[in-house]
Image 1: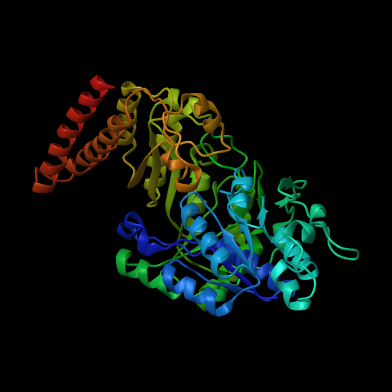
Image 2 (image 1 turned 30 degrees about the horizontal axis):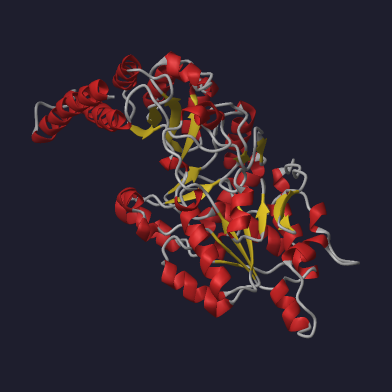
Length: 488
């Protein structure tokens, strides 16, 4: 039984990411791969990031895996559908298993498109039981090989199981079709003790293209690390499709053990902690500091957190443990919009923590979202004021879009202005009736960026050609906003 895992992200097709060039390896897949291997199931990870579709397809034809597991998120969905079509056409004996955040609320759609099984939620234990079941209950193609005289049963029959075989309906956390009826089994209980998971074996893929890209475009490279799963906060726009509304964390000692291995094997310039709220537990952060000292491990890192989980003592510990950049979520400079999002944070506290972080010689970044339902031009002005006052070293801006399964999606469902076809679109193409037109927000984004950058740079120098360009961009963006405000 040959098992191949992949993720359908192709960097050479993503023009925006090629400009940013901060690619991260598929850490979730590596976790599942390592878990399967520890259970005695050999597998291969095909990392598509620096590959091409032709190379991937040629590899599939060459390997002819019995099982292929594909991670699916919002941005890779259309590539995954293309993969399904290819596999069903060229490798009909291969069982297709999908997992990841995109499949949770569209499981039946993916199954009717051609997937055989969907893993819903946390993937390690479910994938292991599913692969085990497929080993006992061979797919239609495999039974053809076993006994060409007997008609090969359907996947539904295989799922139901024969005497002595696995009944897939008893595997928690999966979905499949049985006699053309959609079946979703009971949810799987989340892994309580994350220390039971093996440290991900990054040697399953080639990390050097990632490290080299970071070094080339940013002067230093980075490796991603996860210390926790889930998030206990209730932001309405945020997807909790995989880990749910939870907070589970590996012990500080286990994390530092992983960091020591990373330093030994790769010696990266920096780490990127992918956790939603790195400083959520001050007790854990203290243990992390102590474990780093005890094991004599030191690697600079950046992370994400919330202002209400920061104070001077926390920032001091971040500095002590090697943090060189922290991203502090705000999403808006308007308290009204923050409250509409159910962010449960005070905008003044966000500003204070950005400034205090910088006093400790740590770079501060923040996230901004425009176009949230109920936001007005006055709220955008407050956001510009917020960014000028807090003066973060970095900020990113997105225009709000609804992800299926979130509270935001439910709130705008009745106000959608587009209904794109599921098979040819993703959630980013869903739009809804906002305060102003979508084009208004395109100009609003440009205005926020240019005006805040102009304000920040103006403090350090006189009028330069680059500053003049920012000023002109600000003026043009203001005009564009007013034009589309009045025409909306």
